[in-house]
Image 1: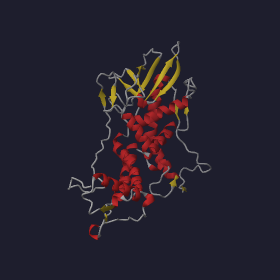
Image 2: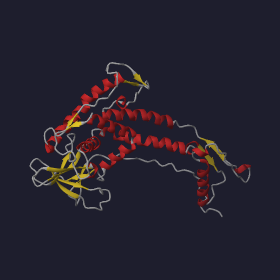
Image 3: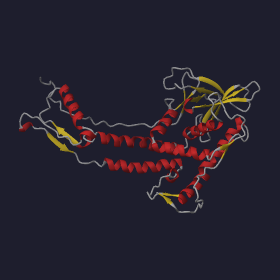
Image 4: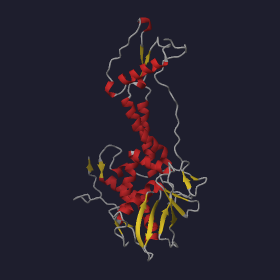
Length: 365
């Protein structure tokens, strides 16, 4: 059987140049819909949530920031200790609001009042499911924005003059003039995206170590039928790619020495070094955007161990410039619907044991 296409050659891989566009923060008026889309596809908060789950750096920073903001516990004069039918405590409720604020730049919660006009229930609403109208007077909630199969729930937005027995307090922070919040780390979205892909690159390089470094030329295979080419490619891929096959011997069957199969080793393109350098620059950009020091995560960039004195100095600056402003902002905002003194954050402090000298230079390795 001969192939009709005499110019066909055997190719194991096709090199395709791809581009990836980072989703952009924007508010988009939706046609024939009462709400404003959050992002071009209305899924920008879902993108942030996926980044959090796929970037170990982002997850570590966000969760540590949450610990710092919550401090060593909150004090409150709010009269509900259990705030809803799910038996969530007031502390659990505040914990969720802080997390949403750090990840999305805002938060929302449902306020249910009794017949006397008193708050009877508070329900945290996952912020990635929240949308608002252009006037920001209505709040829409749906877990199905990507499919659009469900009609979203609609609430009145809470305000100081609201008499509604069921409304939603919606807070979008102060970094935006649009209807949706802008996360404070928005400048490093590209670096966060890169951080999620570096590990995948190294994993694929490990599992497919044969592919980028070698070429097998079947010098008499130009006229092979396409289905035979595919069969050969699948067989070689199955037998010789991956970590479990890195020391196999390639057997070649030829009609004669003139038409023998040749094997070429490609020179190292330095991609591993490029990615390692990319890790360093990406990491710096991420920590800079979050205004975070690696030492505050218990990691020493100089690999000299954990230095208590250096940590305390770094935390003093970070607490003053980042943590305390966030605490004050949230205290002030939550006092509006819940009452003055409803939330008071404490300072985050570590128990250092017997040694209380903050000027010590002990190193924990």
